[in-house]
Image (cartoon, rainbow, N blue to C red; front, side, top):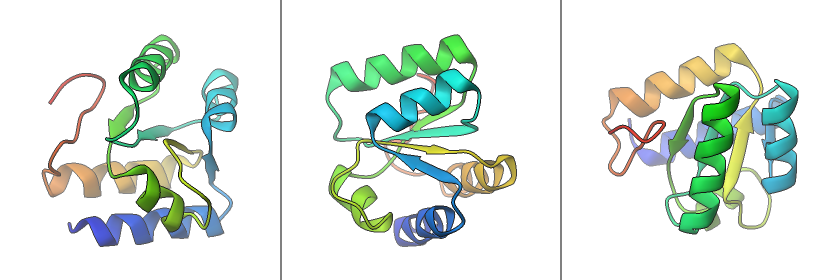
Length: 113
């Protein structure tokens, strides 16, 4: 699947009210058990990536690295975003399937390629 379609899908998630954006909101979503899938931008700092991978591992939440901060922000109608949390199981599964089916370049799930 093309990246543009994934960005469009993220726009659908935000319109459905099933997407939390920004580091604080995403961290809260993870620790509260609301998050079903975490997306971290590929151009996030190594410290941010490590922080989210560790937190997701601890709370057993799938995490993928995808896209760029600017494009993730644009797709969600916000400013740059380094992290997103999908809070709906069905949407998270659909997005994961889309990400994995296209063998996205640079995709990383819980530290495994």
